Length: 239
Image (tube, rainbow, N blue to C red; front, top):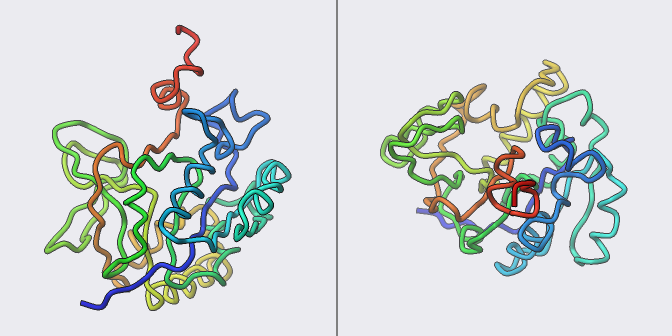
């Protein structure tokens, strides 16, 4: 098995975070303070701890609030997504597509609680996922055959491997992703897509994706006010 090394990371941080209103009314979701630090700090520090300093952060909503990050963290480069108000997050990866090579792709609205999940050594393109058993979730659930993703359930489920918003891409697969991005976004104008739709739903035959097994809680994805309050009591008005 060929071993690959992630050399850079792309962090998607352009969205409005409407499900976290009112907290995101004046603050982009990745810049919210959670458990004593901004979510974006958790991501950058975890990447640095694993030797990854070439970091591209795709901004959109309230982009000026991210402008100090390159001074705070040398190696961080900001890429503005001018399509963020009209297109789904396929647009964020589209504007950063030139950096797709031996890369970690991440959402900016999560806390990295276990830095080991960002170990840059990986065998093949893969998503982080943890095993979900007997607990219904609306998050995307993966089916595997011999360690390879064969199906993704967008509606969730009660068992299987729950997809996390951290993935690793080889140079070869990243090139395919770049090509598919350009075709779907420019030629077909599929502005509605999540970028993950490309390999999991739109063109899965072009990819052979595995998983990096993690534990529930290694990566805390925060999508709703309820999830935010469960993680950090400062947002819970009853406490």
